[in-house]
Length: 156
Image 1: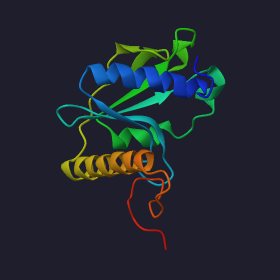
Image 2: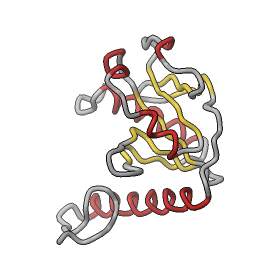
Image 3: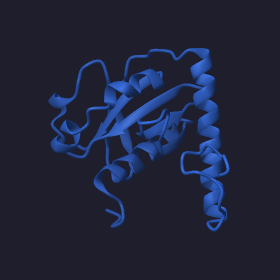
């Protein structure tokens, strides 16, 4: 394992690598709405939006009380866990990926609940702005004036 990654980040890495092979673009730790932060938001080649929550242990899963709030921000919802995770803990009616730091595999497709057109537009725009702001941060780490949520608004 890469020493600077936490277990959930390790799973997210494998998930992002897997989804990339299927034409998805991904962002980790994406904030769809104030108070919510998803582990992985994925934007598909047809504009579909998936949310993937990475759980590294029973305790990690049991401590997550916000996941129901993520359902209204995606077309499909998934859990990503490793091979040792007790899958019987995961709620039915959600997708499942088995993952490690190098790849993942979809075990169960999450049911599709299509977002409304206005919400899809809002999320897609926020995804694009967040990705652009993160890229700018890598290319010019000393730049100031952008918040960390991808809003691109100057600080006051």
